[in-house]
Length: 598
Image 1 (cartoon, rainbow, N blue to C red):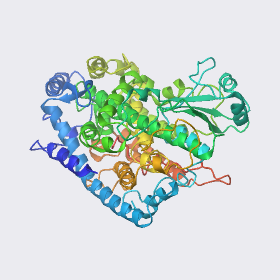
Image 2: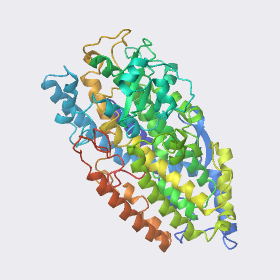
Image 3: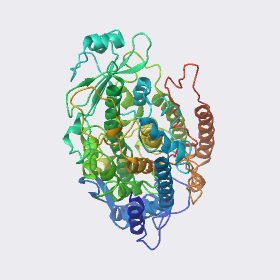
Image 4: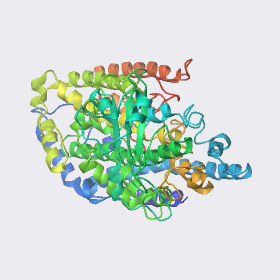
């Protein structure tokens, strides 16, 4: 793989500025005084400061699609971008070098052990290699229980949580599962499951619009899942691939046929989750923060907290185009479609499929809109919600203390001219579905909590440490097939469809580069960057008030306690953890970054 060269080019570009200043000290007239709201004494100076910033931080063309979400331009923007890129690549370059060294050693060890003759042989990559970059391998159970239908379905409620939705009664269904098969699996027909609120659906037919790379193959799968009327387990009902044939696969098929369908679905799901995450975390956080930069003085407490949460944010879209989507880069080499297609698909998800809709991407709002909470028979096990709600509550509690310590009442929020300017800036920024006003402390708390969740929980659930441990782990999550999709059932060997030794090592290397198993070790500056330390930046706390420092201490205590819960997870007597045959720890606050990473 050619990761290092592309990263080196990016790092070189990031050092253009002769002097790179810390983000919170970039404006030359910013002070180290305590954060404050605008008032009659400082209004004129702050207004002049913001005008200066706006003139040097403008909206430029999107660097991925050209006509997508704005990318900042101007001298002030360049300073921020250069700072973010410099700090990011200073740690990423050495890490990628370790990943590539691990990959070479792992590929050699697997080859010497006999190569890849069965699906279980892919386990050897983790058993024999990647000890420096994926030291614990995939999540416990992810490989040993990899053919489990329960594992396959519960991934939609944990490691890959953004594609699934509950179907409302009366919904027109795109295909039907045979009634006899459905009754055998569920005690109900598909139509009866729909009426009972027990039918769920994932649809990746929008991937039919992409050109599959020559020599590679992929479906554009859709699948039904169900909540069993008797056991309440969340299980798969049927899968249709939509390329190659219109065959409907079910758990009653021969083992290899059904496993093939699940792998094909996982392939489409991985593609979706990765580009959805890019848009709903990186891109959405970028544009909201851009509006904040152009509206709020760096001395404003709301700017300060958003600046902390947007750590390194302006490094990632550039990293994406230079090290992922670039011609001949990892997407071209490993996925079933090209980097160019990935950019177009990501833009489609942002503008047409909800990834960029600010209000609708709120954690609880999103789950409610998809019918996963608050409607129908409840899901007895929903790990993404169960872990996310704990962190959401702690973030909201911190933000409540933070906001109320600066705003005495709702009137103070409504009368803040900089905050009002920030809300109005959403229009020229092109932010979709953003509030048209913020008139209360609770509304401001909700906005800041949402911003923090996008940067932390929503990102960590699908990227960062997660893919290499689950949604992109081999052999059950290939990025592409290398044989045409069958037009009839009757498979007896899936190995010919799988990536070869080099391609497999490349896939693991790519996702290992996103992994952060040793956050403190890969951080040359020593700044606190775990989720538990989201607000624990000394410079920030020094300028904040006593209430903020107290709230930070409480947040760290809460997150440390939750981390102990996550780290203590084990299989019960049924071989399950959180109702799943694998142990999920993506949102462990002491082992997950608070910010977007890669």
